[in-house]
Length: 74
Image 1: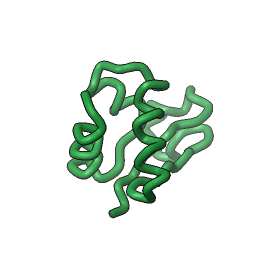
Image 2 (image 1 turned 90 degrees about the horizontal axis):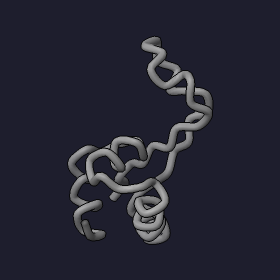
Image 3 (image 1 turned 180 degrees about the vertical axis):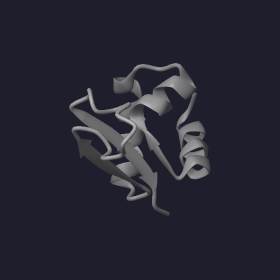
Image 4 (image 1 turned 30 degrees about the vertical axis):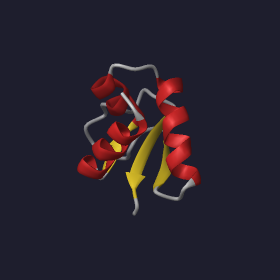
């Protein structure tokens, strides 16, 4: 996996959680965050943190404190 792979995935998905990125690339969160930080510095993606879940009614994410969502903005 290289930086351009992460870019392609984010462009395709539009918005995606850190958990889903890690699953897709079979990589630990800290390694992914390092790559995502490069795109954040270039103002190509935006990090959105949802506290206490996503406010949807499915309750699938309600047990997590913070959910990191990344959105491709350029």
